[in-house]
Image 1: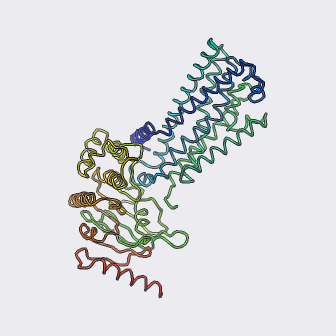
Image 2 (image 1 turned 30 degrees about the vertical axis):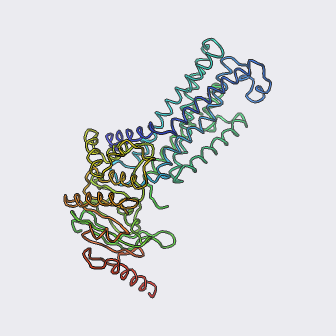
Length: 256
Length: 240
C-alpha cells in the first residue's frame, strides 16, 4: 500500500467528512445529549428525586462530581455506540446507497486503501467527539457543582474520554455490515443489535467484563471490576472487524 | 493479443437465472471510439463491469493497455458506469478535485485540470453549486467531467448521454472526439443509434449476453439493420 495514495485517500475522505451534515449533526447531538442529561440528573439529584436512584443507581443519585460522571459515562456508553454506528453506516453505506461505489473501482487507489482511509478519518472524528464530550461534561460539572473535581473526578473524566474513543472502536462492526449489506440499514441494524445485547449483558451483571462490547463501559464506571486482560479482549473486536472490513472491500464485487 | 488498449477474450459472467454475458471477444484500439449497442438487459453494463474489475469473470481474460487487471495503471483509465461520482454535499469544483485526487493527479496539477474541464463541458455555472442541488443532467455532466478531466488513455462510458440536454450531448461528443484524436481508446454503450453513428468508428451489437454482429456507422438505415440483427438472433436462439 503506497503511503502517497493512502494520504490522498485520507484527504478525500476528510473532505467528504467535513462537508457531511450527518457527521456534524451526530457529533453535536451526542455532545449536547450527554451534557444535558448529566446536567438534568445532577439537578434532580440535588432535589432528592427517589426515581433517579431507582433508574440510574445510588452513585448517580448522590449528585456531585461522582453523580455527573456516572450519568455521563452511562449515557456515553449507550448513546455513543448508536451515534458512532450511525456515523460509520453513513461513511461506508452511502457509497452503495448513492451509487458512488462504481467510481471507487478502476482507480489507482485500491479499495482496501479507501476503506482504511475511511477508518482513519472516522478515528479522527471520534477523537474530536470524545474531546468535545469530555469538555462539555467538565463544563456541566463546573456549572452545576461549582468547584473543580477531586483527583478521582479528574480520573473519571479521563476514563470518559477513553470510553468515548473505545465506544467508537466498538462500533466498527457497522462498517463491515454496511459493506456486506451494501447500504446503510444493515449497519444500523447491527449497531442497534450490539447496543441491545450489551445492555442485556451489563444488566445481567458480573461477567460483563469478559463481553467485549460491555467491558469499556464497566471499566469506565468501576475501574476495579475490569482488568487489562478484559480490555485487551475487548480491543480484539474492533481490530477483527477492521480487518474484516478491509477484506470485504478487497473482495468486493458489484454483483447485487 | 492485438495491441489494442482494451482487449477481452472469451469473457463470461453469469448470474443466477442465466442473465449475464457469455464468450465475449472485444477490442478497442488507440484512437478508436467503439460503441456497444443492445436492448435493455443485453449485457452491456455487465460487460463494462467485468472490463473494469467491478465483477470477476467466470471465464475469460481482460487486458488494459496490455496488462492484466491486477497490473493495470488505473491512473490512465476513466470510466462512468451507472451513477456519476458526484457527492451530494460537495459542489461541482470540490467533486472534481476529489475525483482528480482519486485518479492520483498531483494536488498542484488538479486545480488547473478542474478549471479546464469546467470550461470544456460548460460546467462553470455549477462550480459552486452543491451536487444535491443539480439537475440529473448536470450531475451526469459532472460525472463525465470527473471521468474525462485527467485525459485518460482508456475511457469506458455506460450510456453517457443519459439525462443530458442537447447542449450536453454535443459537448460530450466533441470531448470524446478530441480525446480519440489524441489517441484514447473509448468504449461507449448507448441506446441512441443516431448519436452512436455520429461518433463511433465501430459499432458492436450485443444481445442475450453475446456479441451478435456489427453495424456500419455510415450505413443508410442503422435502426433497421440493428433490429434485423437482434430479431435474427432471437429467432435463432428460440429455435435452437
